[in-house]
View 1 (tube, rainbow, N blue to C red):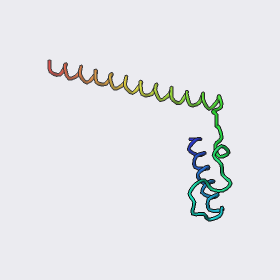
View 2 (view 1 turned 180 degrees about the vertical axis):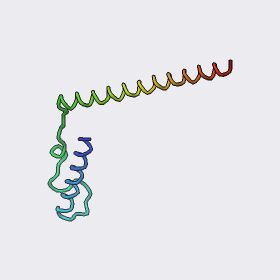
View 3 (view 1 turned 90 degrees about the vertical axis):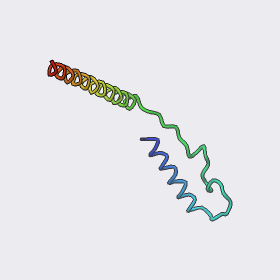
View 4 (view 1 turned 30 degrees about the horizontal axis):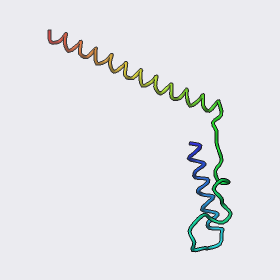
Amino acid sequence: MRKLTFAFAVAAAMGAAALAGPASAAPGMPAGVSAPDAVTHVQMTPMERRMERRAVRRHIERRMERRAMRRHMERRMMRRHMMRNM
Protein backbone atom coordinates (compact mmCIF):
# COMPACT_ATOMS: atom_id res chain seq x y z
CA MET A 1 0.00 0.00 0.00
CA ARG A 2 2.79 2.36 0.92
CA LYS A 3 4.71 1.61 -2.30
CA LEU A 4 1.59 2.21 -4.40
CA THR A 5 0.97 5.57 -2.73
CA PHE A 6 4.61 6.52 -3.20
CA ALA A 7 4.48 5.53 -6.88
CA PHE A 8 1.43 7.75 -7.42
CA ALA A 9 3.18 10.64 -5.66
CA VAL A 10 6.27 10.25 -7.85
CA ALA A 11 4.14 10.04 -11.01
CA ALA A 12 2.21 13.16 -9.99
CA ALA A 13 5.44 15.02 -9.24
CA MET A 14 6.91 14.07 -12.60
CA GLY A 15 3.72 15.11 -14.37
CA ALA A 16 3.67 18.45 -12.54
CA ALA A 17 7.36 19.01 -13.34
CA ALA A 18 6.71 18.21 -17.00
CA LEU A 19 3.87 20.72 -17.16
CA ALA A 20 5.83 23.42 -15.30
CA GLY A 21 9.04 22.93 -17.28
CA PRO A 22 9.82 24.45 -20.66
CA ALA A 23 7.94 22.96 -23.61
CA SER A 24 10.33 20.77 -25.56
CA ALA A 25 9.84 18.34 -28.43
CA ALA A 26 12.71 16.16 -27.19
CA PRO A 27 11.59 13.08 -25.23
CA GLY A 28 13.21 12.25 -21.92
CA MET A 29 13.17 13.21 -18.29
CA PRO A 30 11.57 16.54 -17.36
CA ALA A 31 13.93 19.34 -16.43
CA GLY A 32 14.94 19.29 -12.79
CA VAL A 33 14.05 15.64 -12.10
CA SER A 34 16.76 13.01 -11.89
CA ALA A 35 16.23 9.32 -11.22
CA PRO A 36 18.33 8.87 -8.04
CA ASP A 37 16.67 11.84 -6.30
CA ALA A 38 13.14 10.75 -7.22
CA VAL A 39 13.40 7.28 -5.62
CA THR A 40 13.74 6.87 -1.88
CA HIS A 41 14.08 3.65 0.09
CA VAL A 42 11.09 2.96 2.32
CA GLN A 43 11.57 0.32 4.99
CA MET A 44 8.91 -1.29 7.16
CA THR A 45 9.07 -0.61 10.86
CA PRO A 46 9.15 -3.65 13.16
CA MET A 47 5.57 -2.86 14.27
CA GLU A 48 4.32 -2.80 10.67
CA ARG A 49 6.07 -6.09 9.94
CA ARG A 50 4.56 -7.67 13.06
CA MET A 51 1.07 -6.43 12.14
CA GLU A 52 1.40 -7.81 8.61
CA ARG A 53 2.56 -11.21 9.88
CA ARG A 54 -0.33 -11.30 12.36
CA ALA A 55 -2.80 -10.52 9.58
CA VAL A 56 -1.38 -13.30 7.39
CA ARG A 57 -1.44 -15.75 10.31
CA ARG A 58 -5.07 -14.83 11.12
CA HIS A 59 -6.02 -15.31 7.46
CA ILE A 60 -4.43 -18.77 7.38
CA GLU A 61 -6.04 -19.79 10.67
CA ARG A 62 -9.49 -18.69 9.52
CA ARG A 63 -9.07 -20.56 6.24
CA MET A 64 -8.06 -23.71 8.13
CA GLU A 65 -11.07 -23.34 10.44
CA ARG A 66 -13.41 -23.01 7.45
CA ARG A 67 -11.93 -26.11 5.84
CA ALA A 68 -12.23 -28.08 9.08
CA MET A 69 -15.87 -27.02 9.47
CA ARG A 70 -16.61 -27.96 5.86
CA ARG A 71 -15.05 -31.42 6.37
CA HIS A 72 -17.02 -31.84 9.58
CA MET A 73 -20.32 -30.94 7.90
CA GLU A 74 -19.60 -33.21 4.93
CA ARG A 75 -18.97 -36.14 7.27
CA ARG A 76 -22.18 -35.42 9.15
CA MET A 77 -24.19 -35.25 5.94
CA MET A 78 -22.65 -38.48 4.66
CA ARG A 79 -23.39 -40.21 7.94
CA ARG A 80 -27.02 -39.03 7.83
CA HIS A 81 -27.29 -40.18 4.24
CA MET A 82 -25.90 -43.63 5.09
CA MET A 83 -28.21 -43.97 8.13
CA ARG A 84 -31.23 -43.00 6.04
CA ASN A 85 -30.46 -45.69 3.45
CA MET A 86 -30.25 -48.49 6.02
